[in-house]
Image (cartoon, rainbow, N blue to C red; front, side):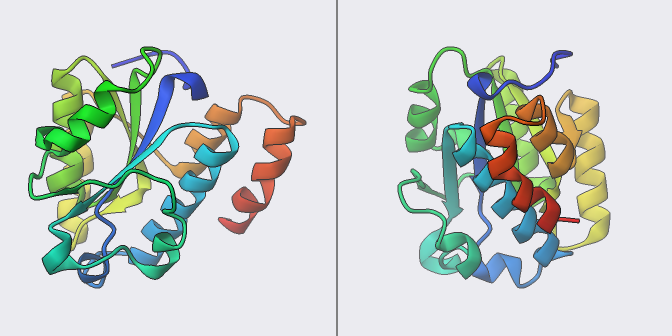
Length: 188
């Protein structure tokens, strides 16, 4: 686990499985989608690499429409593995990230399955997972809560989107801050 603040040059945003069939059953799905959207905007403004996955897209379908519209140009391997790093195409993308990238910011579903197992895979590789607490969820609140508790105990860093966004921005008054401000205000 890292004790230093997030820096954009050290991060990659990894979006995991917010697909229509899954999201229809997810606890507080609207909150999750809204905060994934905010994290994508933040990553774009700060030029943070973005990686995404789908889980068995043939059966579970595309991302929810709000996010599908934002995915142009973002690599999105389809997987059947719960730990995204066990997927060869995903692992190859992560391996090609700049050496400075040591932190993957995780958002998506489900907290206690794919988010948890991917975070564990990152820890095994010496990378630091940051889990966006309000941009992840599970079908039940209990599994969401237990997933976050287990992630924290394992060494992942857990925090809300707004905290992570402000940490990445670092200061007010910059062009990036001004560009991000409408997305932060819209999340209140």
